[in-house]
Amino acid sequence: MNMTRVMAIFEKDLKEFMKNMMLFTSVLLPVLMAVFFSRVGEGAKGVVPPEILGIIAGVVFSAVLFSAVMTMIAEENEKDTLRGLLQSPATILDIIFGKSMVVTLMTVLSLVASIIIISPDNYWTAGNILSLVLTGLFFLNMGVGFGLVVKSVATTSVYVLPVMFIFGFTPYIEMLITDPDSIAIKIAEYFPIYQHMFVLEGSGGVTEFIILGAWAAASFLLVLWAFNKRKNDE
Image (cartoon, rainbow, N blue to C red; front, side, top):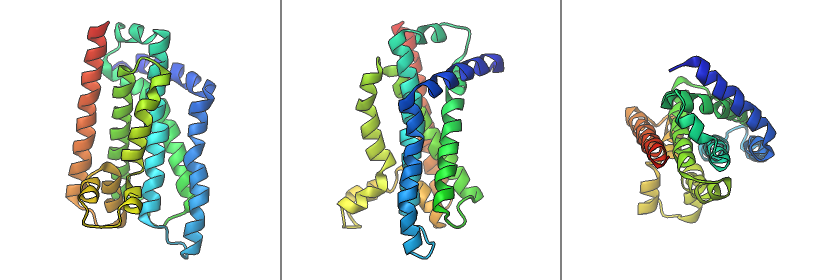
């Protein structure tokens, strides 16, 4: 991995991010939700339900991390500038790291600001931070993979909404299905945000981290497939 190339891609994408109001305002969405959900904490004597924290993390990862990196790559597809990157000496790691640094920075800022507003107890534990990193890798890889496949920014909504509702808003399934023994809930509990919530609650163990690692690894395989597909198409 060549850090000079990585930083060149980072600087280019940082400028593009700051110019794109849709991407920039997406960083504020979780913060606004945190302001709203902070009322829940006040009504419960400072105790914030893990479902609320899970939803906040899901919104940050899906609306900022996943959506932003996919949109940035899709914009280059539209402008036909991605071809130059793929045919340049930059390796796949150079491209992924360069584009990921901007959205990761914005994701961290959005998440930290949201958590500060809600002010939950014992949030920044080592285990919870690790679960956030693994969950973030899953959403980041998904964004890069889908971004390489889509041809335009307009088509990104086809992927953003399903990923946001299925993976970002997973805890909402308990509002739609009240039966805790439902097969749908049992399946949803294996999704990344639920695994993160189990760790956050303190009920998680090694199994939760293995499952999160498997999600991250599977999403990276998507990146490799999409990268090779895009390169072959050119």
